[in-house]
Length: 307
Image (cartoon, rainbow, N blue to C red):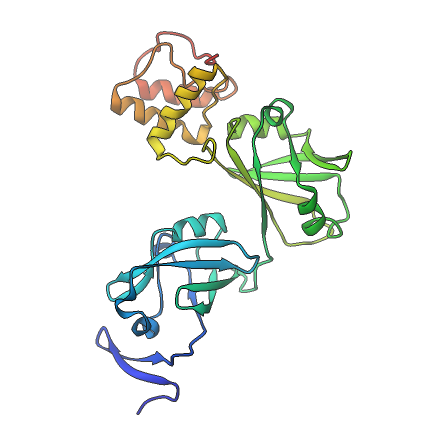
């Protein structure tokens, strides 16, 4: 006997029901195996059939959109290429629950609940193309429209903020003047050093909730090390840095988070230059020691800036 609005079918030797044509919602609990791909419920698999693979749109409640490939994997429609980018950009963690609302077969809106089981406070980003003045002065402007739309009126203290990056917290001042809002002073200089941001790269600042007036204004920062919006693959990316620094005769700072990959690359290619141009900031003594240990040789010249 069939349930009203559903059709009986068999999946993996088990009796299941297919949703009626007007299905609109389903949810998925995020497990470790679902951070890079996500299979949709078997009950909707018959609605895709031979249409896959196909590009589809994942949309957040805030209106951000991500293009993800939907294809059949083990007879289940599965979100693959592009899903990991959504997971990372939207800070989705294991045991979050994602509620999918079907706009059409290839367009979904997702509502996120965190580990508390409650709907997550909406998050908003702004992107900043890094200029020389941002690095030299260790200050980062907040777009005034972003400030008015998402910060103004939500806090008691508008003079302090924190930037969170790579599990570290940097306390900074919010400077008000000439119609601008700047993240500056305090830990801003150390943030510049630790992150290794480069002129021409893009930083994305995420305003972190919940919007509690008693809490400090928080931003989670991530950056891509792409230049001019072009995204090379990882290892050629390192080569691009070296080439750009050599041609433009600008300081080259490689972030600590990339040093292991840099060392592995030059070791594997047996291509260590002399003098070694991929200097590490002098404050990062521990990283220098680890890199030298990986080299298993004494560099021909001191670790210096490439200028």
